[in-house]
Length: 268
Image (cartoon, rainbow, N blue to C red; front, side, top):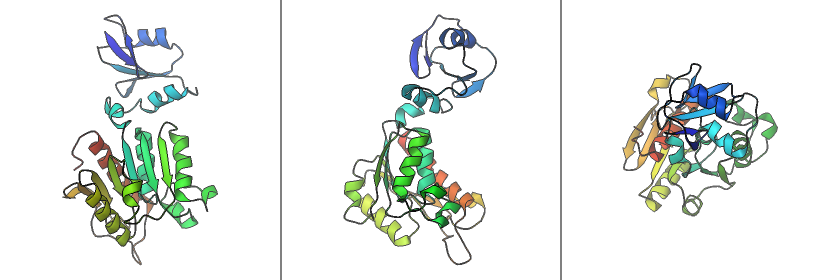
């Protein structure tokens, strides 16, 4: 029968057990993951099973790293998203955690666009560090993402997005993400992208500010290929700031919507 070991297809005898295979292939492995879940007891393997063998503290090769990063993923998902390209317009409070989530998920290519630089007030909710203050956000984020998953191709654009450059920058994406905090920029990106690429999906956000209940943030289909995340009401304003928890909830709604679109599932 055939099973996958660290994402490589192997033929093994019928009736072999999990630990028998581990002891043959990598006896020093002290973490064994079967079909996306860590196990500590032996069991018989079935045709098509996926097992990952990990030795704690070992720095893997580039090929092994990819398989180990995906060891806890739902089987079959990584192969479908590895070939995908996702565009992210704005890499601040929403865009930077979205990019981190998608890099950890194994999306193959991320196109990042933002003209801004990292400043101290960003650190309350964005995926940046004190020593990155003053760097362009796309440069800083690309450096962080490369440390998380060097297998992701990163295409950073330190530019202000306009109606004239949106189509050229994001022409090759499979799914687009709107992650601005300025209403006019949101409207421009959404209108421009969907008019130029009506067959592609865009995941946007509206109403993510404050410290309100997490459960008021939802994902819904607005119209056509436009999906909207948030409560649709709570904008940043005097007395209503941007807080890491609620912004993070919305960002991960967006990232999950992107993931579901890439694997052909309804994100709502």
